[in-house]
Amino acid sequence: MLDQAAQKLTDYEGRVTLRQVIGFPLPFPDNSFDMVACMEALEVMPEMDTPLRELFRVLRPGGFFLSSRGTEASGRKSKVMSREQFKTLLESKGFERVEIVAWWKWFDRVTARKPG
Image (cartoon, rainbow, N blue to C red):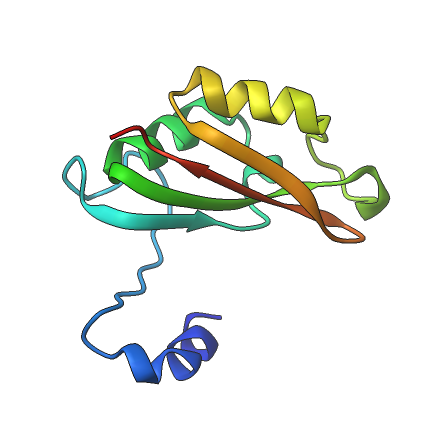
């Protein structure tokens, strides 16, 4: 999947770095990234507190967070939260300007910012 993303980002060479990391804590210093993305993953993790805390930690102040929220239509055995529950969870971890909108049948698009 990262190979496909890299091909689509060739115009941004030198300005975008793609990384795949498995597990927590994340091996990056605090405030390392302008943007972090965690797509189609949070709802299948054993718990969301640690991943969200770590994603927030490595995001620079004012940074952009992109994620997804599995919908009831996905049929996956996952933690399906309502949009309001997921928004409240993100805000409890420090994110602001949380927006959750319909993206496609199985997932909503989630965006937020780290204050700063």
